[in-house]
Image 1 (cartoon, one colour):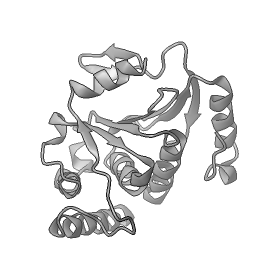
Image 2 (cartoon, helix red, strand yellow):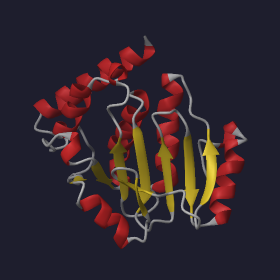
Image 3 (cartoon, one colour):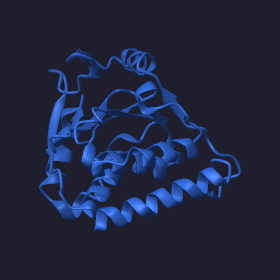
Image 4 (tube, one colour):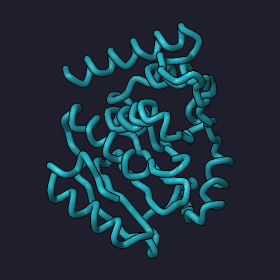
Length: 208
């Protein structure tokens, strides 16, 4: 019931923002327009940042490559905990000028999703192509609410999702098989995140 109520509120938000011309209320005088990347564009974005790719029948970022250090994170069942995790994950990769949020493998559990909800949300941001044609979302720190909404939806709908920082140093991934991890080129950053995972009280304010 909590997940259903959250979805209804999210859909209402998306509908209202779309009806108002695609812009949510903001205290800023100008609003950055989010960029959406096609299956051709997002691999190029990754390659330009030395982020390895792998072929599993389709191209995906390889954020478990040997030069990356891994911190395993808990994948919660509770909807509220998933939203908290979404905020935390974005905070780990959002310290640079932009972040790639790549949605993947979203059709595994069709009974757990309501695609029109996410479609309307993307339309409110000015994107009318279907998700399969533009699965990448380039977000900036000023778009934290939108970024957390994307990650939260992917968690609530049990999709795969990648988050990759602009430099390619830090990234996260969670799977429809309900596991999640953080990766970094910096061993100390990964160790800090893993330590915070063992201390839940500190996880809301990561120091990386």
